[in-house]
Length: 292
Ligand code: SF4
Ligand code: SF4
Image 1 (spheres, rainbow, N blue to C red):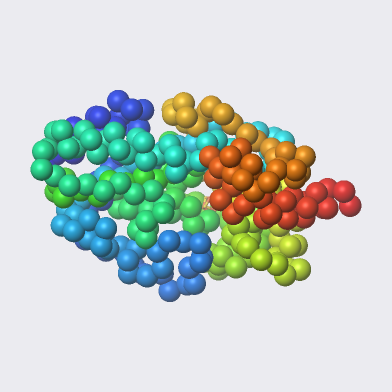
Image 2 (image 1 turned 30 degrees about the horizontal axis):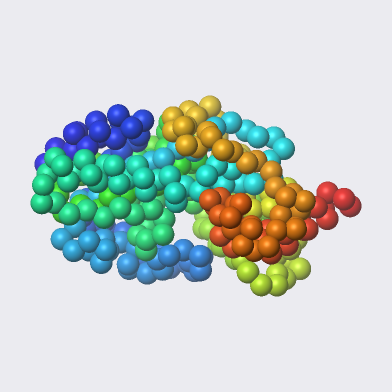
């Protein structure tokens, strides 16, 4: 079944990275420990039937979010705009409605990264890019600064083929990683700054030392920032990622807010989901390193 009508519709929404992943997905369950923040941990990462019985193919779409470098930012690139969990589903719903109108009787289910499925594997199988040694999914046009959204469907669209481009294996990401998480070609999450800035509870001195190494108070972009595949990439064509940007957060912005006020003010930001206390904790570590 031809996928071109779907791809044309996606393109009309400025989504020009759209592909079809096949069923079955043929994914391999990772034997390394998976970050506890990931929603899927085992075979469910490759079993779309659990979410949509009789799923026959998956439409996968990249949502690029790179705008430009913000030199004085202390937030990871992905959380400087409105939370993508509010933006991506709205686009997916429009595409799902198009499917419903064009192919009455079909069923579909939209997923962003809150489902157990491996979004990156879906994007790989849909021919949208390749994996870097930094564990990121890399698209030739938009680099690794992309969110991934998918629509599971009972329609049997012809699948796309994975592409043959690959990571340069230059080692820049491993050398830049503050947590030394990318040794020997594998990723280990335990000292990943992105994970640690979201981890609740008391951190060990070693964990705090990792957070202190770079200025970001939420997330970490080092392994993407240095990657040559991100040189000269296209900026996002999506207006939602250009508007209402917030590149820096300081204690004065949040210290006096109650938790409810914090949620009201920042609840539409991806950095707010772990709460104000974690953010202030992270800020205290990065401020301390600046002041010494
Ligand atoms: S920095 Fe080099 S090794 Fe790391 S993902 Fe990019 S190209 Fe691959
Ligand atoms: S996000 Fe940061 S800490 Fe995590 S692997 Fe990449 S460079 Fe290392």
